[in-house]
Image (cartoon, rainbow, N blue to C red; front, side, top):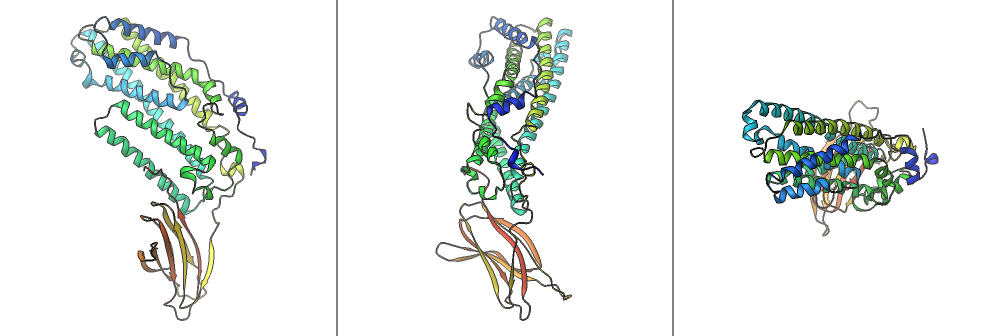
Length: 433
């Protein structure tokens, strides 16, 4: 097993040497020319009808400078694909195209259907790429967490947090929000995740109380994570190396959307010519091919990146069997443990069993949980019941003290050997959730 002895700081120079192993194949020269051609065709359509404010905004975006961050561009491409697919939806096409009024209309419909199919496939691939990367980051962090019921609870809380985020998105859609509104929220949620990841490096924010679980995390990894969102931090090398190619593709998909929007909106005044629809089709074919190649390439770079150091790679203890305690509870006595909870939505969790003796009769023990208020009033949370062993948890609705009680008071003769592990697992969600 490897150790942290061979790990070095993840600096810009260090990452540059890593990226040297992954040279990005150049984007075809024709991509930039296609973007310019589509923008020129869009300008010609302005003669048929002046731009509306919305169309003017699209024009400005298509001729502007793409966002700097790699992942922000990936989200922007995903947004534009959805916007284009919205335009290509058969029910939203001009009536002449829906009815295929002429052979020329039928040919255009066939081309638009082909573009729709290619973009749907690429959108699905991008969605899977983003989900895989998000899971990869979380799963790497989780290798440093206790590999027991606490790690399971942290995973469950992360799932709940993601469900809450999806509920926010659904609410925007239900309220009539646009595709752009939805993606503005999705990007905000993505930045929230990045901020939380940076907080892991400095043990602040959502990770302030969780840091006690992190065992064996290399300092070089924590230092890198702390700078992950910095404008001139180590990740800037990745943007400099691979950003220009992605920016070129972003500009192409923006040009495709602009031209498609304008040409369909003015179809009654000016039908799409054969040469023009050929340019659109070529742009979609090249875009989906090149963006697919880029996604595959950057995924390989990402998954093999030196900042994905698992606990096993770092030689950290997996902690599968740590912190179990044993105590003997005499006949007629109880054993109590009090856990302090600082934040609502924390989890009280336990795992215990009795060491069975040589007698054929199975031993059991009573167990219940109480909440103790600041005024020392007690509220029963988990009713009394007798167990041979149990593992469980519940989500707290109050901060304060929780008392776990193992009760052997009913036993006249038999002492009980209790092996147990308990904890108060803090919430792995932001306060707004």
